[in-house]
Length: 152
Length: 303
Image 1 (cartoon, each protein chain N blue to C red):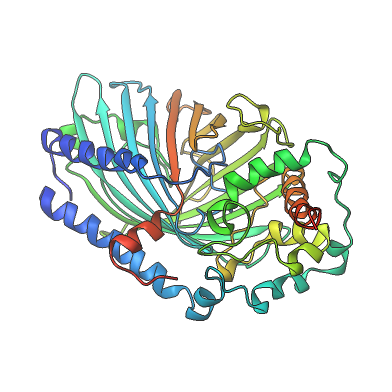
Image 2: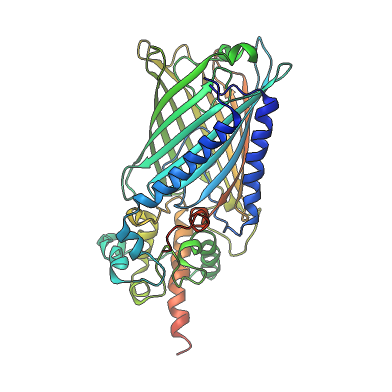
């Protein structure tokens, strides 16, 4: 079978559009709505309650590291801001991390969510980041709550 | 089979690369944290909606023939958090011979478990439509050996391969170390070739586990080093490590804050059936939010 260049380009374009269309179709509508910008209904945060007790109780080894917040901010910008927004206020695809649910969660809970992701809602697992880097991100996220309280 | 001489396929490659590089004009966010493996796969998929455009080269030595430079472009898209799809376009230059386009592959990886476990399985399946002149050696299967790459391009390209390939990818990350094991089974759609098997294993670790507070290109955490080993396992009639090729390859990746990743891997043949040297390098860039941008361009729904 010989394929002309035009046919080949058409084939690739068609395949690509097909995949894009399919990727939209396979995301459950409920999940799309619940993770949309500004739609921070409680169910988005229900995953926090699924963390095992052992994980919830884990202490943040970076808690007192003076560089952890700055390093976490850098990592957040690289890996998280695309979905959660520049200032973690929530984005097109993922909820705000400044809400009471997140800020009152233990560092261990946030670490568990970061490690395991919420795959069916579109959040990938982040265990590819080394453990200290995940703790740095947790430290940064927790610092956002403290920053909001301080002016009051 | 794609039967394009390079005089035609060359501009095609150029157009695709220009298209890919032109995308950098968009303000996509950087998001590079790539593994150093070139042959082995870990269990991490592309982030949903992100497109990674990659270019890889393999320089291979050839006893009893001409050395070659094989290359491929890879377009990896995170369709969902549990499904990544990739398109490969392959080509090669055999020194003192010619440069040809050798075909394409469509690969899919599906994450089987929702959360992290002691071992994390990912199912991989691929359709490949390549010629016998393909030399990227992205995997070794069956009784593949150096002699298979010795024919002149004009002859080798007459052989057409339509193949389905399945892999079970197992991977685990612990204390910064990633350990990956891949087992593959491939079957030609055409003809009566038996099932062929192969393997790849890898281990890697970032040079530093903690991130520094400043954005930097040369911080140790940006470098990931490791080693991978891959080879054939024979076929259904003669399964095993004998009469096939095996390679051991140190690997290193440099993840730049600008979301570019560079990879380098000198691979060394471990037996007489193997090429003595496969020197691989690659460059890739990730475009976060690509899917959303395309959706907007195509007038998709607003979330």
